[in-house]
Length: 470
Image: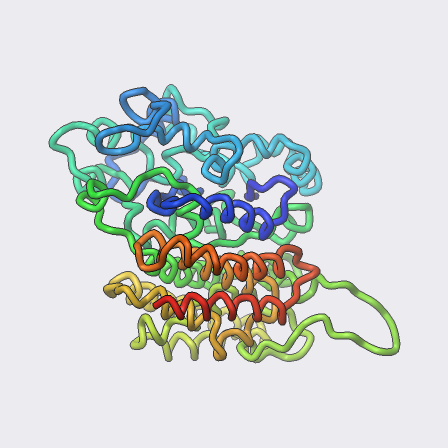
């Protein structure tokens, strides 16, 4: 069980959050991830490492300053993580929301008992370390703390990471999670922002039926919303310069690999006699139902989904994004991925065994594409190319439903701001485009009132304006 949005709709939340974040000049210079996830020792950790808790990081000479004026890192990271009213503080609030009305109702409906002690909830709403690996200052009430993302600190990188002559490489060797690596970051985030096979990290349709928000993920945007670190000369010297297009593209590939890898496993793919509907596109079925002599279809045919009429489709929001740009960013892998994606959708109408086999094949192709996207060099024109392809004639007909359209507007939004942040587009020029982006967000604000034609028009207008700035 996961999701930290209270009663707020998913798209409305991100639209309002992004609008507030992106309205501040230079906001995306601060790019970092405190993603929900790692319950187990990070690669390279020494022995049986201990989770020491947020309090261990909170000293005024470490990450607990009131003002971000540290010489190497900001040193106010705890204050940012605890911010009560912005997305950057969502992880610190994750445990507390389990005690709220929605969290308790979901737990009661599912027979989980108290949500704040239910393993199915704690896997993502807290740093749920094994009992034998909890240090003296560890507490579940911290929510999703530092070590959920950076890895357990005790017995490994805690004592080393601030001492000379420590380097980032030596910290990683001691167990610190290398979040500057796009694939590593995506894997950490996806454990909770999609799901994993680890205990308490898989959302079910039953959870969503009980009231849990729909899960959605976009690596570059989610990274920006956390804003714990300045991307300055010191950061670049230690960790390299992050690239928004790389994070976006690798995030999409890893999301496809994660979803299809889980779906290929029978214990996740089925729930009783029915498929596990969590994997499917919610809003292809959850529409107004009426009975009368004249039918009125409430969906549009998606040319990328060759399945029999009436079958619920797999949620392909990340596949759409990845297929759209694979030819431009990784042409050597694009054809095989597109074939595997189409074969997977076709298999959804054939049967469980065929579907699982096709899911395994697609996960493999997504993995190869992720490797290619992570390894390639990125240039000044890539963000412009990606925006143009997403809103282009070949891709936009696939925005027939809410989920894929949410991914598209998040992509155009975050990439526009990456262009501003990197000095390729001015703040003034971007401000004139954000009206179209706001219209696109508005079209997907309420799932059951989604307006595909209006969405596509707004997205096309925004993308065209961005393209003219190249």
